[in-house]
Length: 30
Image (tube, rainbow, N blue to C red; front, top):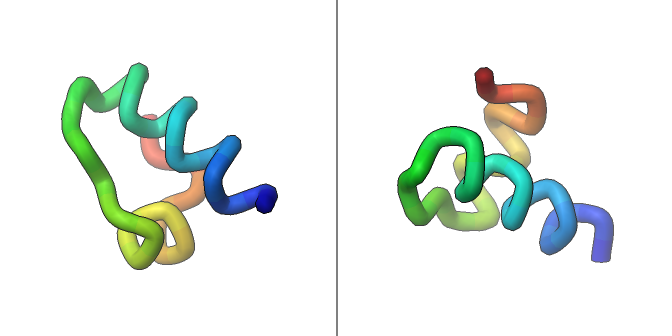
C-alpha cells in the first residue's frame, strides 16, 4: 500500500511512469 502512494509521488515529480521496482529502489528520487 505504501509503495502505491510513493509511486504516485515519484511519478508526479519525475514526470515518468516508474514501476514498483523503481519505487523500491529509489523511494526518495528527486
